[in-house]
Each structure stands twice: as structure tokens, then as C-alpha cells.
Figure 1 (cartoon, chains in turn cyan, orange):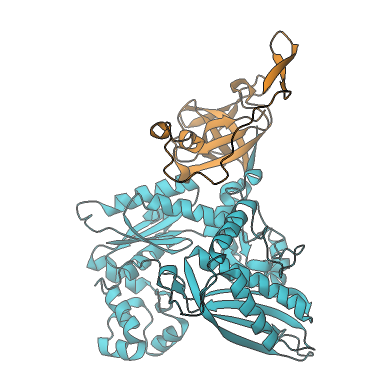
Figure 2 (cartoon, rainbow over the protein chains, first blue to last red; figure 1 turned 90 degrees about the vertical axis):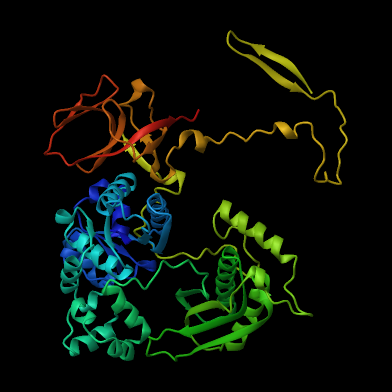
Length: 419
Length: 149
């Protein structure tokens, strides 16, 4: 049996743990730079505020309905997430952290246990210990666990937020209840095609022939069909190292000078390099891109990217920035108002599998230097130690006008209790 | 280095360091190679880790800062750093962080038949009676209060 544990309205719930006045009030969380809504409490959903709503368009609606608006506070969400996940690992040794607020657990060899009761205990322990409410679905396959989870979330009173699909009758009932567009892994395109074929719920989908599903939806679709039929086909996935790492940002105002963009590219490269070192990888290629503001139809438009092969696998900020700057000089053109740039490192290899070339290798002196810089930045705060190509005074700032405190990760931002 | 007595009171004796003498010690600037035999090697204890002694459940432990004086009789003062464990059951007589009607507060809890009393540790504050009408949550149990002098 598998369980899918999912935190209810995770970001909004994190804010609520430390701000009791938010209970039963509408809360929305905005994306980076306070652009659009990325999370909503149930009360905000009930007001009809859609996912992705642009903040500036909904400003009046927020004010009229006393909606509490927050910038995303990933330091807080990340810490709360790891607390939830750590508690879950007490219940099963096999866990796949699927996203910041969801985890699959495998219960192999638990046949003699009442999983529903284990689920209720998990639900209570996580909710009490962290303040984050969770919903749990149990089923013989991952896709069915997703379905069971949806039922637990939809009917919290009836299910006590835990639902188990453990027989055919429950499986069929649950699938008939699940709209085809809500099935895990069925995208908008496939949903449309299936609806055109008069398939409106997940149960009808499982009645299609294997041949048709394989032809129309490839092997991924066929696996999904088997999963929904109750045949376990997907196992827990082990975390994989990333295949590429990107740091891309819009500028707060348009840049026209090469040196301004050059500083940004240095900073993005430093951030990519740091992430590479963090996951113990080297890269073999670096891509740099720049573009103007597409929305300014009145201005000349220009966008270009370039990929440079590094002569050897590296994760040194110094070496990668050398290549990034060559790339930027090659694609930069005078006379444009640039709005955005980015750096993407690709061709990642684990540190212990780097191909050494006979004549060119990454400067071995850089490794200890980088590790010292990483340690210093970790203990003194990010970007305290910078490279000379990065501006010293400039700290890249996200627009975060409604940022709450980092209640769990900064000692000077913890909650105050009034006696 | 010697110490020179500076001033005595009934409770303290104050000294200042005296640097008038000096002792030259050899400096090994070549670094000490690994495996340098030390008579203390077999007796190295782990250093004291306050986290280990104070925090029993790290995933459910949170910190908060105290503002106010309603708990002064148990030694919880303004500015103290509280260590709170959310996973503990609220037993009668424990000191708890509570949320009542959208506000955080810290009080000793007393349970009666479907009523909670929130009792301050300061004569100037009356006990608060919590009834089902109140929006009331016991947020966590206070396990330590850390002071800074």
C-alpha cells in the first residue's frame, strides 16, 4: 500500500501557525516579486480568487474582502516542510518527498496493521506537532493514493482527513467521482481529447483498451491506466540530481549598458556555481541569454542566447564566470533596453565522474577557495563574499513588500508572546 | 601573567591582569602533523551540545520571545527566550503558549470539566476562564525559558 500525504493550503497554513489572527480569514500568497497569486486559503478560494491571479488586478478585491496578502517566504516554508517530512519518516522507512508539501510513503509488509488508524495517528501527530493540517490517502498504487487523498481533502469531516481505498467497491466509486481532468498526470491536452471521446471520469478511462491508451497517450498513459486499475506500476522515486540549473531574473529597470548586465550575469553565474557545488556536480556547458521587454511594442526588440562549452568540467565560479562573460560579450548589442538576462549551466556530471582532459583541467586551487566562500556565505548570509565582477554595494532585491518574518529560521524574527 | 587585586567588596573581589612579566613559549609554526601523540587523546569528551540537552523533539520545537510580566513569579521575564514543544500534551499545571481569540499568550493551564483556566503567575492578573465560545487553541508547551544577562 502507498500513502500520499499532502499539506492543506501549505503556504497559507505556514503563515497561520505563527499568526493566529489569520484563522478562518482569507489569505493569499504571491509569487516572487509579488506578481501573482500562487497559494490560497479555503476562504480565499471561496471568494473566487483564481490561482495565478495578477496581484495588481485584484488589489481592489483583496481590499474589499479584507484578504491578507503575503509575499512568498520560502525560508519559512522550507523549514516547516522539512519538519513535516521528518515526522512522516517515523511511520515508514520508504518515503518519496514529491514536492514541498507532498510525500508518498510506501507501507510494504504492513498487511497486519490497520493503515486507517496509522493514518489518523500520522494526521494528528503532524498537525499537532507543526500546526500544519494534512490530508492522507491510502491505496494499493500511487495514482490511486492521489485519488484517495483528494477524497480525504474534499470531505475532512466525514473522513477525518484520512481515506483508504482498500477494496474494489471503494476503488470504482472513487474513480467515478474523479473528473478526468483531475487525474494525476493527465494534462489539459489529453483531458480535452478524452472528453471528446466521451470520457469524463477516471473510471471510464480505465475501461479503454490498452492499445488505444498506448497509441494515444504513450507508455506513460498506459502505466497510469494500470495504476488506476489497482495494479502497482510506479514505485517510489529516488531523488535525482538536477539535469540543469538556471538563475534568471528580470531587471527592476531596463539596462542599456554592457557593464550593468555583465554584473548581473556574474551574480547569476555565482548563484548557479554555488548550486552546482551544493549538489556535488560539475558542468560542461553554460548558456547565457538576454532579452528586451516583449511588452514594449514601441521599442526595438532583441533576444539572443549562446551556449559555450567549457574546456573541462568545472563548478568554479571564477572559471564559469570567465565563460559567461565571453558569452555575454558575444551576444550583447548596443542600442537596446534589456529587461532580462539569465545563466543556465548544463551537461551536469557528478564530481566523482568528471572526464579529465590531458591538457585542460579545472584549476585545482579553486576547489578549496570555493568551499571556503560557500561556508562563509552560509554563516554570514548569502552574498557576503562576492567576486569583483559583482557590484559590492548592490544587493539584488526581490520585490517583497508583504514579507512575513522568518519565524523559524532567524532568532531575531521569532514570534513575540505577550504575557 | 599575574593578577593584581584592585578592589574588594563584600561579594566580589576585583582583579586586573598584570602584564609586567612575560613568559616566552615556543611556537611550532610548521604545524603539528597528524598523529602527534597527546596524553589527552584517550580522554576527549564530546563537547556540551545545548541542543541535545534542551531540545527533545527538533521537528516540533519552536522559539519565542517574551513580552510582558504576567509570569514573573515562575521566573519568566520580559525578553526571555522560550523553548516550546508543540508535540507535548497539555497536562494540568503545565505552562503553555495559547491562542485565544486570535492572540498569543502564555499562562499556566488548569483543566476542569470542559473549561480551561489560564492562570497568570503574577498577583496583578486575574485568571482567564476559557469557554467553548472562545476561539481557543493550545499552541505548545513551554519547556525552557532562557535568560540573557
